[in-house]
Length: 283
Image 1 (cartoon, one colour):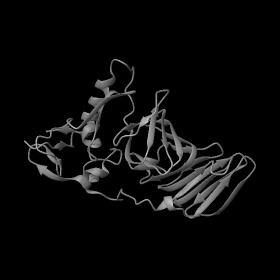
Image 2: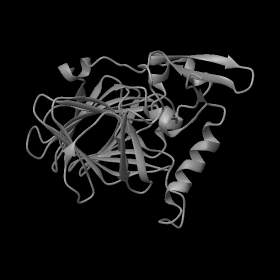
Image 3: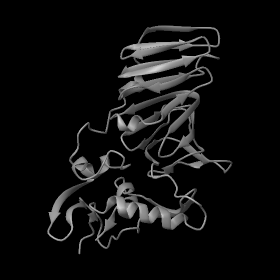
């Protein structure tokens, strides 16, 4: 039988897999919300906790106490459900907290943009720099620059709105506005577009996959791009990959790696491989 992904069982199977991987090590279940590296261009490093930095790989899970660093000329993106976090070259971003209740990011230096598609994905999203704290108040898109000028952070809102707090005050920014913050002042002005803003948006606002899975399913945007859905009399709606090599089987092209707090975790090489590997059941 051609491998397919049974998605009506998504939430049940997800819970079983995560808890079974961590029962011996944890007193409580690990978070269900997790990020996924979705784009790597150039040299990008990822480090977990105090471990050694290693080259970032497509589909690598991102969670609390991870750090992403891009070299000059590189680009990186990771997604958490319907939220996309993008790093320009020569930047460092710490994921200080990522769980079911919050996504807290700290930009050490460089440029990051965050785009959130729906209100539910906004839950607990917070971005900080040495000079600023940013909270999206509605679905939208913000860009933050830190350290390009010493002691300065710039927050730009391309879509939606965001609350910005600094040492000398607070402001609500709406689309088309920016704020420049230092320890001595907070100045506002008009948005200034940069080349980084022209990175094409790969996640459509609406996709057939969302008829079968929720926005919280990290990697869902790849399912429609690389496969198709069909109804099955026994299993209901199934997803089929559009093209796999002869002899292919699930969990055959990738690697197992130990990732806290879940334990041994499969990292698939296929661009569509994250969601089917972590949320569904192959039949």
